[in-house]
Image (cartoon, rainbow, N blue to C red; front, side, top):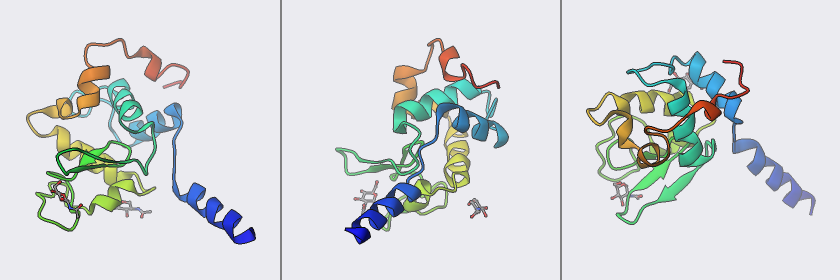
Length: 142
Ligand SMILES: *[C@@H]1O[C@H](CO)[C@@H](O)[C@H](O)[C@H]1NC(C)=O
Ligand SMILES: *[C@@H]1O[C@H](CO)[C@@H](O)[C@H](O)[C@H]1NC(C)=O
């Protein structure tokens, strides 16, 4: 029993889930507000709908690709999962699930430098594009 409790604590400690405002602040300090003309609220909206601000989020797609981390970045183009992938961000896919979110943030910056910009994210097109995004920064004092 004691070891089970210990294991559960370890699992909880290594899965970082940010609050909305914590994440917004972190993005701001990583110079994401206005990056490529994309406002902070868009980035917060994107992460909320992709991962619920969970750094460990992982989803397997029907086409055999996998989405990793707080931004749900896809294995086909952006990271190395051990098979033949383009690895545009030059990282291991598992690093996108790290508590060190600079890996995911740097990779998201790389993704939006491509012609599709933030439109690369389905959840952004569906939930954030042309929407009122004021609630995503509400109460954050930013
Ligand atoms: C790695 O990613 C590629 C492209 O997303 C996918 O086709 C392949 O099945 C993946 N391999 C593993 C081991 O997950
Ligand atoms: C976090 O990741 C960044 C980018 O990969 C790296 O430069 C930095 O050293 C890492 N920080 C820690 C505390 O591991």
